[in-house]
Image 1 (tube, one colour):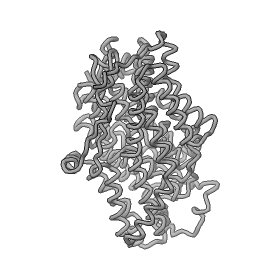
Image 2 (cartoon, one colour):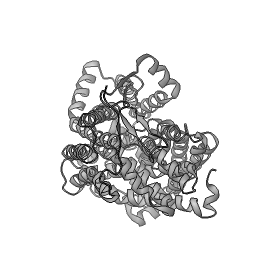
Image 3 (tube, helix red, strand yellow):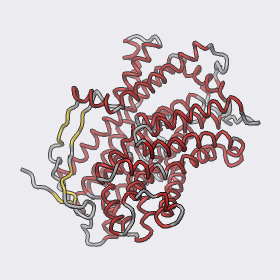
Image 4 (cartoon, helix red, strand yellow):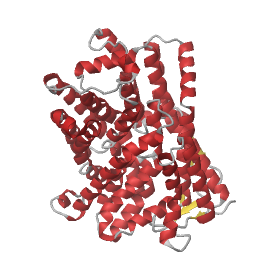
Length: 549
């Protein structure tokens, strides 16, 4: 039997040097992507090689365990993450080949021809619904594809979809990040939900303004401020109320539905004086289009695939549905040479405990499977036969092959850093910041999502550390655990997984470095603003009165 390996968070006997070594995989990954402008899969493989070398040579992880962690990450990258991306792009390909994206564009322009408001409606409102229903990259894939269909250039479609997919993230996938946070902190679930619900509504108001400002500039944003305010308020208020009065499960779904309805109704009675057009739309956007001239039947056909997707993904994500499907299909595979053989030790956890490594092959209940079913049903509704569906799926697989490789390599980096303890070393560096910890602890959540690509994973990674540190320095553990999730949402813009999903959805593969550079400053600044809010909630009245005790 293989011996258990305890993690070491200061293997070099110097906190500074150990932290610098722990940061090397991230620096290599992001540096080669954004600075050297290497292709994403090349950058990811270099980051993985660096992580393996540091894990084994510096942190003393047995080589077989490091290899097992890397393989585990590859498997997780392909399923469930890659499985979602593949099937969303499959649906998009079907609708495009049938000419329905042109009709869909026309139907959106009947609501508004202004590009700023189309962006607001699609990326923020519609994207929030998909985040609430499924999460895990689905909203970026869907909204990025729709924005491309509307004529947005690839960089804007990708970057703006990432910026918009922030405020809903903590309550994504029917509250999964908050539920995961509760499981590792043992804090009250509804108190955690309420505390996050007293942080993110501020940013649900800010993000729509920020989104349009990033696209159209300050003057362009001011011209449509009434519609932006309607979108933000109609999302923030339900987010606050549902998270505090009900719990984390339906926060985004309810808030997004209210926001979509409110913006659509508002635009029936108000339009800006000047309509904003794109300066250089792609050729596909300049082709003859049925803007405002399609029959009601054609418009219905164009929206049917996305309605089917919305309904099925929501139903697929319900706990009752997942439980029923898992009961007949799930296979849990302990990762050989890794499962319960890595030991997390204090101060990252209250007491030493083994780290599980179970690969859940929930092939039937996975969100990607729900999307595939929706795509097939939608394809049949569009008149596609079995051969056409098979041919389109084959073309889609060829289209996203490098993206799947990149996602797999990115997740492998994340899993290697997690099981080797590199992530915990970085986290402990944030935990040594004294009275400024509320600010830097929030940025720890940002770091967790940037490393793992998931607010859920970040909460599992650092939730316990947040509680321990908060109790040691006299802060509310509810506040800091919630801050981990709230700060993490801004890391979704820069995590490699989301960037690859965006580049794939917009068919701009090979430009991931450009997307990263576009969103990086937005991500850092918004994360710092969340940190400032948490700092005020920790020490300053009246913000401190908002803290759940």
